[in-house]
Image (tube, each protein chain N blue to C red):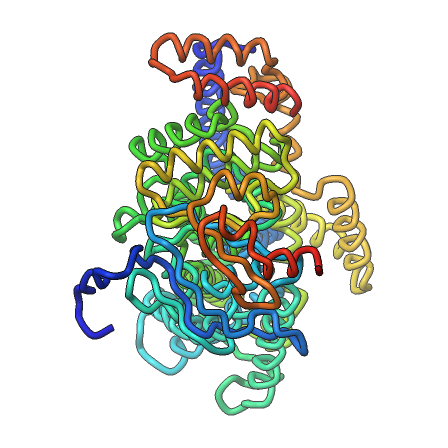
Length: 373
Length: 258
C-alpha cells in the first residue's frame, strides 16, 4: 500500500498533467486555422466545433442526470431559426439576436421540461423525439414565417468585405469561445453540490429523493441550461452557414449525433463529448468525401457505435483513464488493503482514542468484513 | 394543523407520538397492500414493524416516505401533516430511510455517496464545491463510525454488500434525520455485521434518534426494540412491548397460521 506522501505526490502529478493537457488542447484549437491550409479544411473545422458545442450542451442533461434526449435538435433548430428570424425581421444586432434567441429557447424549455421530465427511461426518449417531429412539421408547413421547405436565408453578420476563409476563421474562434464557456459551466456544475445532486439522480433517482435532493427542480435546471447552450450552438451555426432547412435543423439524426458523440467520448467526462465530436465529425466528413452522396457514412457510423458500446461502454476517456491508472500510484484500494493492514490501522486509531470494548468488538467484525471484499 | 406550535401531548398519554398514520390505504390492482392502517410510533424509541411476507410493511414504508402516493388516509410527523408531500420534503422534515435490498449510488465514490445527503441551504452554497472541508470531515466521521472510512475513494459498486449496507446507513445519518426508517437492516448480511448494525442502532437511539425498523429477524427485533407493531394483511393487528407481542395469540396465528 502506498504511503500518504506517495498518494499526495500522485494527485499533484495528475493535477499537473490535467492542466498541461487543457493548455495543449487550447493551443491546438487556437492554432488550427493557421495550420488548416485551405478554406475547405477550415470549414470542416467549424462543423466539428459546432458538433462539439452541441454534444457538450447535450451532456448537461445526458451526462449529469442520465436522461437520454434524442430530440435535442429541437433546441438547436429553434435557436437557429430564432436567431435567423430576429436578424431578418428586426434591426437588432446579430450577436444580440443570438443571445436573445438562446434566452427564448431557455424560457420555452421550462414548460417542455416540466412535461417531459416526469417520465423516465424509454418514455423520456420517446417524448424527446416527439418534440422534434412536431417542430419539423410546424416549420415545414408554416411557410410564410419560416420559409417552409424552401428554407430560410440568414444574412451574414460580417460585411461583404470579409472573405470566405476569413469568415470561417472568425466563426471557428466564435464556436471555440462558446465551447469553452459551455465546458467551464459544465466543470463548475460537476464539482458543485448541485452537480453531486444531479449525478445522484443519474445513479438512483428515488434514493436521491429519499436523501432530500429536490430531484425534479435539479433536473429541470439542468435541462434548461442544456437547452440554452444547445440553442446558442444552433444560432451560431445559422449565422455561419447562412441557410436553414427544417429537414436538417429538426432531424432525429442530428440529435442522435449528439448522443453518439457524447457516448463515444464518455458522458461522465468533461471533454468526452468534445473528443467524440472530433472523431465522429471527422469520420462523417471523411466518409462523405469517400462515398459521396450514398448513405454509407451512416452504416460506418452505426458500426462505430456498436464497437464502442461493446468494448468501451463508458466511452473512450474513462477507458484511457483506467489504463493510465494502472501505472499511477494507487490512492486507496479496497483490494490492496489486507486484514492485517486494517487491524494495524485500527490499533493505531484506538491507541489515540479511548475506544470502549464494544467498539473494539465492532472493529473486529469489520476487519473480517473488509478482508472478505 | 391549527397552531404553529403543536401543544405537548396530553398528560395521560404514556408516550410521545412521532410518526403517525390514520386510515392509510394503498391498492395495487386487486391487491389491497395497505388497508386502512392507523399506527402511532413512539418518538425517541426503537419501533419495530413486523409481519409475515406480503403483509404490506414495505408498501406502508413507501407511502409514509412519499415514494408512492397512498389512495387514502393521512400521515403526520410530530403533529404536522406530511400527507402527499414529495419524498425530498419528507426527508427534510427529519425522516431518513434505507431501502429493502440496500441502495447506494453505484458509480459514485463512497465519499460522494455521503456528500449527496448535504443540504445546500442557499444558492451560493448550492453552486459551491461539493467537497467542502466541513462536509468532508463530517462524512469521514460518520464513515469511521460505521467502520468503512478506509473505503472513501472506492466506487460504491466495488465494495461488499455488507459494506454497502453500512454506507447506506452512514448516508442516511449524513442528512441528520431525527427519525430513521430501516427496511430490513439485517437482510442478507452475516451475523457479525447484524450485531454491528444493532449496536449502531442502540447507540444512535441513545443519542436521541428515533428508529422504525422493518425486520424479519425476530431475535434482533426482540432484543432491539422498545415498541413492536405487528402487521397482517395491510393493517396492524397488535402492538406493544416485545415481551407482550411475542405471546399474543393473534401474532402466533398470523405468523404460524395456528
